[in-house]
Amino acid sequence: MRTRALTLSVLAVAALSAAAGASATLALTRVLPGVDARSFDELPAFEERFAREFGLGDRERALVRTILRDYRDRRREIEGQAAASARAELTRAGREVDWQLRGILPPPQRELYDRWSGGAR
Image (tube, rainbow, N blue to C red; front, side):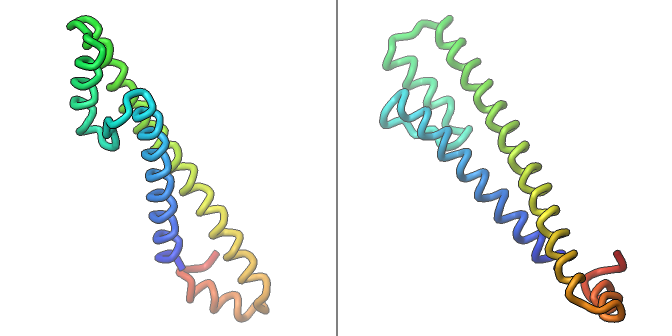
C-alpha cells in the first residue's frame, strides 16, 4: 500500500514538473520564436541569442542574465511547491482510501488489515 502511494506520488510530481516546464517553455519561446529554453542549462544560449537579436550591450545583457536567473530560481520554487502540494494531496487521498477500506471490514478484519497494510492505525 505504501509502495503504491509512493509510486503515485512520484508520478504526480513528474507530471507537475513536466507541466511547469512546458508552460515556461511556451512563455519563453513566444518571446523569441525558435529558442529552445526547456532546460536551465540552455539559459546561457537563450541569453546569447536574445542579446544578439536585440543588439544589447553589456549592461542590458547583465539585466537579461539576472532576469533569467530569477526565472530559474522562481521556477524551482514553484516546482518545489507543486511537489509538496502533490505529496500532501496524495497523502490525504491515501488516508481516505485507507479509511474507506477499513470501514467495510468488521473489527477483527480491521486488525488484520492494519497488520497487512503496514501497522496499526
